[in-house]
Image 1: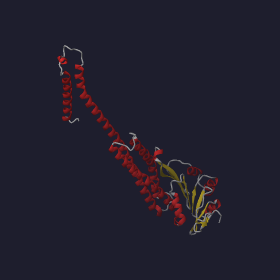
Image 2: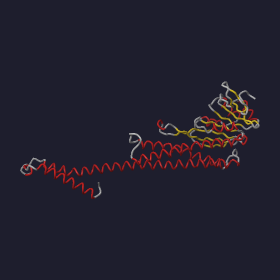
Image 3: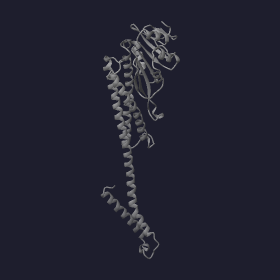
Image 4: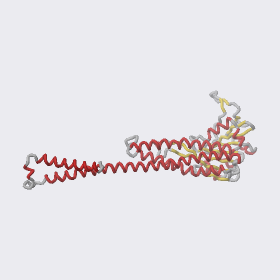
Length: 357
């Protein structure tokens, strides 16, 4: 066996005295090869090629793009050059492609972004999976999406999945990927409930009057991004659950249907939260409009009260002494003030009777 390959059941000691079976992907490739009841971890090109020629079951996880990884995909596994380009490039669109000898999946996991530093608080990252007759190839474009790492650890501890076949490993990875969606999507529920409370209270957390609207738009953009992806991925999972491809055995169909059901739930939540976000945005505009109407109503009432008072003041402000005998009256000033007060009080009482105040 190559020095780069070690059996997981065989203890390994590093320079610090710790023991384990982790192999660094120095060549950009990490492979788990089934050898009897044991799993061998290797990054050696020849060991992987020998395992493929011997029809052994193995899992290749790719890291960075290096010449050895491309050579393995093209010369050993005979992956189509276009499929290889899809593996390394972020194509942004979920897809499933049947190449006859293998099936290529392009899926997208989800991770949370810093809400304060991004207009969209979630981001999608591509997850590529190639399912062959005796092998599976995976490549995650972002290590923060950890759908692959737990399954790698599980296969390292127990070779059961690798003995069952590549389709079962693919199922485990996809199941983990769907599970990563749920906490992110559920976070929107708490976000929207908080925004709803702020709208009903008529205030936001900070002094910016547009803070609530910005939060709603952030959520809407995130949900729209998720919706575009989840609709396509739900269709792909549906096709896998119906065993349209030879690489998916019929006994695996119930498990793929379970993943599809979970992801369909994610899609339903995204749609419902999108509708809720739209309703909250409309409610926010409605409340703002109502508040503006109330302000205009108060200003109109004040103007209505002040208008006759201005009329009285204007009349008595004219310089026609002979026409206004009240100007020579010692109580004329108080008479004018009383008249204006009586007019104002009468208007206020009328408004109250009409329930305008």
